[in-house]
Structures are given as structure tokens and as C-alpha cells.
Image (cartoon, rainbow, N blue to C red):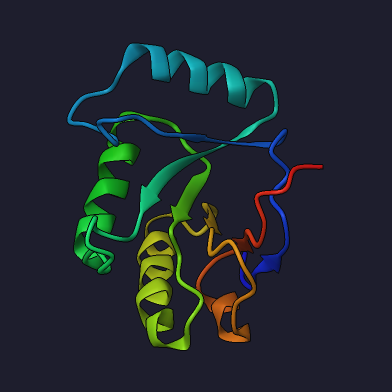
Length: 137
């Protein structure tokens, strides 16, 4: 992959799995079935992870990586949706680290970052795609 495709993510093609329990500690049969159906219909399924704690500080890369690993152990995904991404150069190393950790496990996984706004050009090293807007077509 490599280099971020900066723009909106087409919602009809991508779907992310979110739950109150995050990935939890066991697979949910309803999620397994829904994901299989979505992927069979040509959708790209991505697991949702957030990057900030409730106090606004960044979660540790190890905590986010653990959440991603739990998703992967339970479900078939095509990638990861990294939410709450910042848009400052100060946090670029953090997001680049998450991207490298993910790509080291499966270079074909799609990594979608969601800063929700424009980002410095260096963020192209932190995701395959960046969401700048929640506007849908």
C-alpha cells in the first residue's frame, strides 16, 4: 500500500465494526455473520479503534495494538479504522508507529485514519487513507 489517499472514505464500500465492548474478549457470532455477509457482498470490513483516552490524552500504542490484535483473533477484517486521529506534527510519530505495527502483521491490511480535517503531508506515512470530512456523497 503506502501513501495516504487523502479524501473522503466512500461509506458504501467500507464498514467498521464498533461495539460498546470494543472487540471484547470473545467473538460475537452476530458480528462474525454480519462481517462475512458484508465482505461476501464486496465490502471492505475494518475494525474500529480509538486513539484518545477520556481525558484527551493519547492511548498508548501498546493499548491500541492490543485492541487490534484482539479484533484480528476474533474476526476476518480487511483493515483498521483509526479514529480520533490528531492533525499535528507533534503526534505524527505516534500514528506512524501504529501504522508500522499494523503493516508488520499484514502488509495487505488497509489502514484508514480519521483526523476529520486536513493534516500535514507527513501523515501520508501514517495511513493508507485519511478521512478529512464526515460528509457523505
